Image (cartoon, rainbow, N blue to C red; front, top):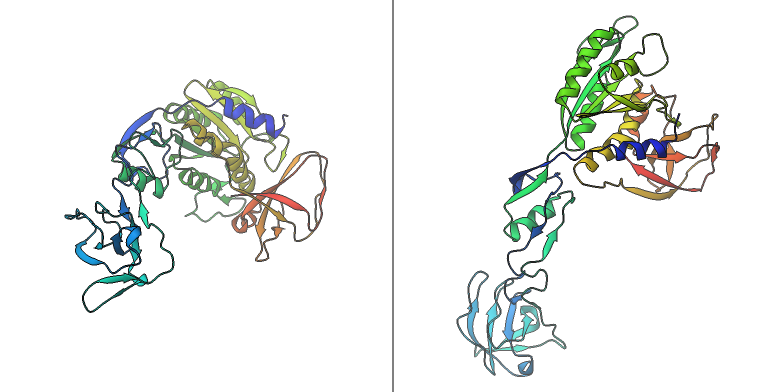
Length: 391
């Protein structure tokens, strides 16, 4: 059995890159960039007004000014501003030659003659200078960036319409066990509905991946082997849930080895998730996850999700926040790293959810995060600051 830290290092060290493809910038949301995005122009592309007002000379702010033209956004100025003159200008419009400031409309008064006068006590320039945000040739986005809506706007602004992104890993999921039936079936005596597969498929989708569900592998070693072999051939990451404990029918580790998968660990010193298994194949990375839904959910978040992003060139870090415990929390066993589902109260305090073991699926449904309790420690006191990992 290895520590969780060693398990994490082993998983990340086993990652391979997924390659890249060219897609439209409009379709890159949630993807990982595999190229630099370089601006093809200055931003702003010209000196422009940041307010609706009058473009004039700062030296003329104490005299009446004649309005010589109106400059709308998207229109070029036609006249040069000379002493005693100004141009009415809209937000985003190019600054006319001769002007060195823009006074806001609300800081002026218009006289019957049509001339305007500045009525404020101080005027900012209210000008955005050419290239002050981005200069032509600047790298605006780097490889490995997780693309957000803001990034798409930036790509549109700099003319990067075809973008190289990392190929999404294909995730395969196999559930194991005679006790399982699909969710649309009535379980009957001694059976349970298969929730893990759909949970893992959804987690994979949330990480941006396409997934393949191969169904339920009954407690038949040859059938399971054939499903694993197919999954390894078709997927970048294969997830098996169930069949990795120590029971008479838990033959998943031997099946994996038979399929050409080199097992790197079969036990992790963590609770929940001790029987988590990981192995490598020349074409695929394979996890054997516990059959209990809380265990499989947490181990996906802790090990599989970081791997997915890393394979695409993104060193993903989960969002964490430091908050106080609302109540004292104790656990009986202290020999493993404890991963405890928690929620955050309206008072911005941390409260472990009611949790009756790794089969208690409703606990993870209401949880907003996970806190870690180091091995050897059984209590976290009320008011103690803990690090909450968002899930």
